[in-house]
Length: 132
Image (cartoon, rainbow, N blue to C red):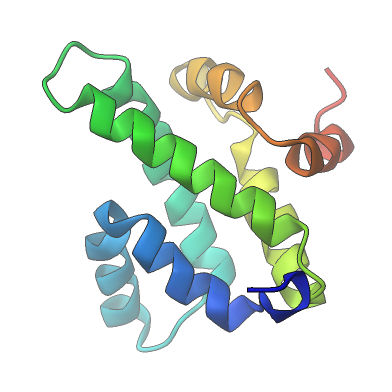
């Protein structure tokens, strides 16, 4: 898939392929809203990503699976922020990167760990939101 072909609509489809663990949240979103609200969904995704990171840091048997989920998800977000679709770039900037900023102590630890795993374009975008 070429860079220019990666649109908002294709991103949502790709998200469900790359992050099947998120499927239940997506289905609840669609049921609650009767339509896709991409910015709201990205807020849900960031919370899910933080939870996935926390699960990856435990000694549970599926910690490696959650670590892989985080890696796959961040790789997809990096591809999306590099898209030529302005709607997709806006979604990732405002509602993924913007929602990464921690809202409490619990999120602060996840934020710090996820921040260092971001690709170059996501890090550049995050610098617009977080000057620390």
